[in-house]
Length: 177
Image (cartoon, rainbow, N blue to C red; front, top):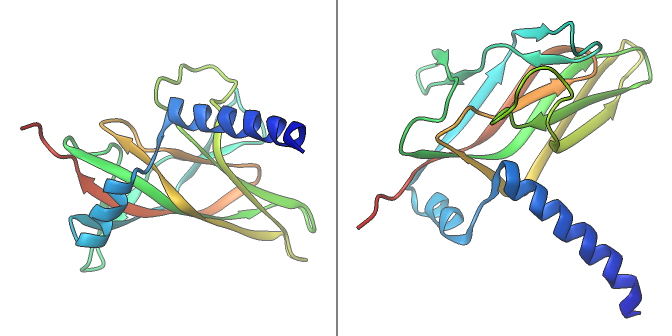
């Protein structure tokens, strides 16, 4: 019995190490901050997708926008100084050939140096396309992935990206003292 748990433990340890290398799992105090109102819900969306000659068959979000309460939107390229962005949800709509998987990957471009390959995938989700080739893939994380003082994570797709959404919280980082 114990021998069966060892490979699973090694896999879990490796995955946690990967996440901690490129992002951070949300700790209990950040989750509590979200519950006490010191965190601001945030919704980022992308409808402007681009391609790169070095990454054939891959599309990525060119410009992220943040939606405001009054319905306007503005560009959002970096986590503001003094804040942590916690991603809890991701969704994208892609067009792929009928009945194929439309995939949506969340990656971190922090410390990424072009050219490819792409950095490791933090979260991957996929859905089978319907008869017209549209696939809507989404995922909700029971724990979030935190990014602070750096570029926001990136969504990449294996088809023609139509929409991409990241949701979570913007939490003010406590100052020392």
